[in-house]
Amino acid sequence: MTQTIVVMHGMRRGKQNQLLMEELDSVAQQIEGTFDVAFIESDELSLPQVIRKHLWEGETSFVIVPLLLFSGRHYLQDLPEVMRQMQLMFPSITYEIRQPLCDHPSLTKWINQRIEAWPDAHTPGSAIVLIGHGSPIVTEPDAEIDDIATRITTDLPVYTMMFYGDKQFEGLLPEMKEDYDQIYVIPIFFYDGFLVNKIKKKIEKIKGDSNITIASALNFEPELDEMLIDRLNQKEAV
Image (cartoon, rainbow, N blue to C red; front, side, top):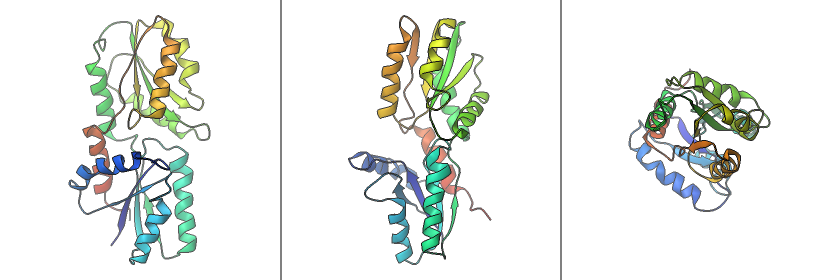
């Protein structure tokens, strides 16, 4: 039998990890089979710790389901390296790492719903800005957020920016704000945490007299459950 592990970023300490795990309770009731949970950054329940626990129980086959929106450093480098190291120590291990959530239709649906709920969604002179985490190391997230923009159904212009990397919003947003009467910024993050709050504070300084509205992040709305359930129910790679 294969053991499925949902891997989240998490925090090294504090209550956030527990809140995230509690949020997964509803997901656990809607999937075929069961899953365990590990955190990329945690002093407890790290991925190696969780894998070792299952190895002691006799399990050697693993499906890793990243609760990550984009293919950043954690997905492209950290998770594969952890699994390679575990396989070197325990050669009987086999594993599959599933895709991040950026290409899932439910994410597109959530963004479209956010736009339609905006009062200026059909007002001339309006524009949409999608902001993701980004990376100073890899460029894959930049291409992924651009791909999301192509799937948005609005007639308004859609711009893509990031917190980190070549598409940093602090450089791009001031250049475009003079061209539009209303701008709607949608942060593509799981919840309104540290980085989203930083984005909001920085935009408040940038906008001046401009009409810039900032949406809330996903905050574990139903679309996130849909994405994760789909990944968990996905058939194993052959």
